[in-house]
Picture 1 (cartoon, helix red, strand yellow):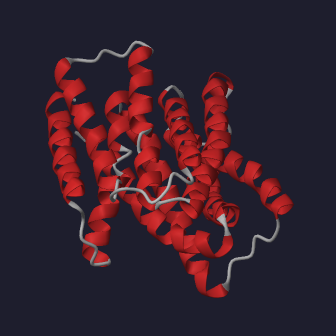
Picture 2 (picture 1 turned 120 degrees about the horizontal axis):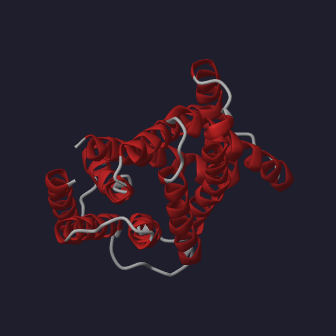
Amino acid sequence: MLTILSGLMTSFSYATSDLMSQRVTRATGPVTQVVWMLASGVAIILPVAFVVEGLPEGGEWRGAGLAALAGAIYFAALFCLLRGLQVGDLGLISALTSLQGAYAAAAVVALGEPLTPALGIALALCAVGAVLTSFEGRARSTRGAPWALAAGLLFAGVMLCYAYGDIDWLSQAAISRTVSLVVALPVALLSGDVTVPRGLRRWAVGGGILELSGLVLLTVTFALGPATTASVTTTQFGTFAVVLGFVLLHERPRPNQWVGIVATITGVTLLAVVG
C-alpha cells in the first residue's frame, strides 16, 4: 500500500511540474527549462544529502554509480520529452511517453521478478489507463513521435537504475540530480542563452521544485518495492494531468480519457490488494 501511495504522489508531482514547465519551455526552449529545473533541485537536495548521509562509503559505490547513470539518462529523457512537446501534438506525445511504465515493468519481469495473473491484470489496466488518459484524440500529425518514444525508453532506463540501486534514497536522489545538472550545463552553454524572462522565473523554479519532489518520491517508491508496482504507479502523470486540467483549467476530458481514469483507478485498487 505504501508503494502505491508513494507512486501516485510521484505522478502528481510530475504532472504539476509539467503544467508549470510547459509554459516556460514554449517561451525559452527545452534546454533552458531543463537547466532551471535541475539547478533548483540541486540547490535543495545536495546540501541536505551531504549533511544527512555524507559521501558514499566502500560498499555503496555500485549504487552510487547506478544513481549517476540514472542522472545522465534523466537529462536526456527530460530533453526528449520537452522537445517532443515543443514540436508535436500534445496527446500523441503524452501517450507515447507514458509507455515508460510498461517498458520498465516488462524489463523487471524479464529480469526475473515473479508476475502473478492478478498482478499482470493490474499492471495492464494501469498501463492502458495511462495511455488513454494522456491521449486527447486523433493527432494532427506524427511530429515529435520519435522524441516521445525516446523519452519513454529513457525514463524506463532511469526507473531500472533506481530499482536496482542499493544506496539510501536521499543519496540516490542527490547524486542523480547533480549528475543531470553537470551534463545539462555544457549542453546549455553550447546551445545558447539560458536566461528565463523575469515573469516566467517563478514558473521555472516551481517546476523544478516539483520535479525534485517527484524524483525523491520516485526513489522512495522503488526503495519500498516491488519494482513492477512502482514502475506503473509512478507513471500515472497522464491521469493526474487530466484531473488537474478538468479542475483548474476547466478542460473537459474526452470519453476515452474517462475510460482511462476508470481503468487506472481499478488497476491501482487491484494493486493495493495483490501488491
